[in-house]
Length: 119
Image (tube, rainbow, N blue to C red):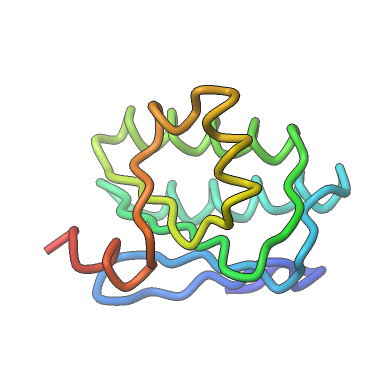
């Protein structure tokens, strides 16, 4: 499942949805809005959504993108699902630490490790 701008790819791995980004910078408001819509569709398609969002290759992330992540986290929590974030570069992880979002999200070093933790 791809959005019209092909900024993300969502693949299904035995009931676990994996979101990957096709751009290094996630800063454009319109793009971020579309990413949010696409991820919410994937979340709402499952009774208990299981989602991994991989930031592999992402170098820049805006505060609006963090807002979308919080929305996704809350939506998954209400549906008693699980969300993992993975492959976060050190500069982006620093943003998570500064905003204390590293306490909210389950962050795993690599997507393959996150995928295994669902089993």
